[in-house]
Image 1 (cartoon, rainbow, N blue to C red):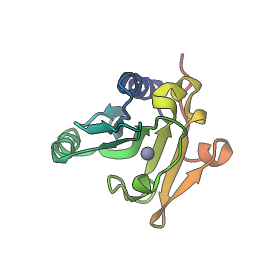
Image 2 (cartoon, rainbow, N blue to C red):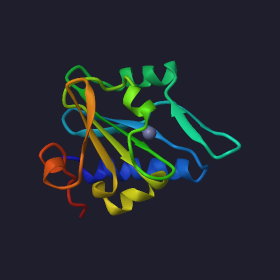
Image 3 (cartoon, rainbow, N blue to C red):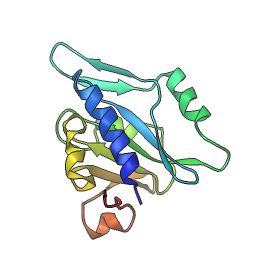
Length: 149
Ligand SMILES: [Zn+2]
């Protein structure tokens, strides 16, 4: 169950990056509750408008330090400038490689989250690769968003 607070935090962060034409990436930490953890990151935009974002060593340290003893990262969430899908780079990203890990791609520099999780692409790591969970019952088995109040 994704809390509305985590989704709101993600949306705010992605939209802020989007004002600069940049993607953002973050992780969702599960301890007592869920928490969005935003690592230091290098986002780039070239002269043609191609964008990418990477988490350097310092950002990987941020992620490691944010994790308490009984906590783990259950999901990665990142924004795209346009449509939400897993790029080859997303497939190859080693930040989550455990069975059942979730990856969420938010379209339109985070604006898509105004329409909720259904507007996002969601993948689940299974048998060594990422399976897309289409919005609906197949997805809801693994991940649902709390109704925002
Ligand atoms: Zn991506």
